[in-house]
Length: 402
Image 1 (cartoon, rainbow, N blue to C red):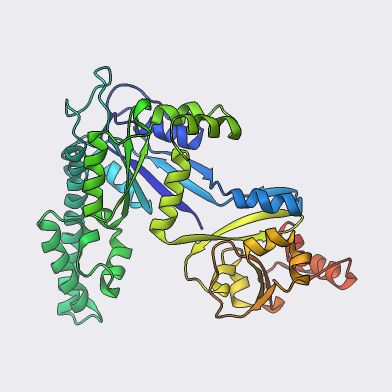
Image 2 (cartoon, rainbow, N blue to C red):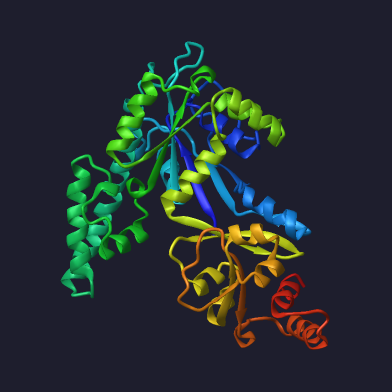
């Protein structure tokens, strides 16, 4: 399961600099003028999780496979983007493809760095972008209402309920409020509507307060205002310094940790963003641990074992029998799977088991549900019947890589 975070903000607030730092890519041109970013820059970044390293110390795998997150550096926005100003609709369409919006806001004074609005005012900057997102949603929703009106007259199933919800939403948006504050936000009708329209103002937002190097440990007046604004909307604020994040690129983990501690920061911007994005989307990770690889798998909190198995392969869900589960803490404390099993810490869980963050899991399932091509299956089956120090977990690990 991939997670996509779109980095947005007014031109020249530090989006591309932040993107370069967070992805360690340094491939998005960063310059002191608006619209430096024209096409969205994308980068796939491993999700930092120290638990994988601890598991690897025990298992000694051939490789470690992290979950991944996609960062998208989206072109700068100005007033009137919903009407095509600046980079307009192109910018807005790029946002629709992301799950979370990281809204970068300038929270520092520097006469050498120009501002598209000619002054530093983070709340004004936030409202400019949020207004454009709402206006774009209003335009898209109006087209949907036209279609729903025709469908309701034709007595299409569910059209009347959807039309009522859409009209109520349109009234809400017209008042200048975002879709995320809509009273029917959690209803099934709205969920279906939003799934189709991918409303921009319905997305989870994290505000990134970009500050100077000497303001990491304290909140300046700009940051305080952003935090107050975010609190009223149930949003999160991450304070970071794009320049510091860039400097961290060339450091090893120990040096980076020492530098952050000296500045009064406990974690990097990347770690803060990923942790917050995961929480916002209700995501967790479980692990598989074997000699081939130690790997993190990202799922939604509350998923049951068969659904969790589907992120490895869809057929694992259909043929699910049971799961062998060891909690991360027990796995580490016992020193591995064998000792955890001896200590009675391995559990056999069925289809109704809700997977917990950090579970170390093996899935047992019916091979009849596997959709394998003939040659792969023949070779895998031959290895299986030879029983060369073998079990189902190893079997499917082998044929997966054939």
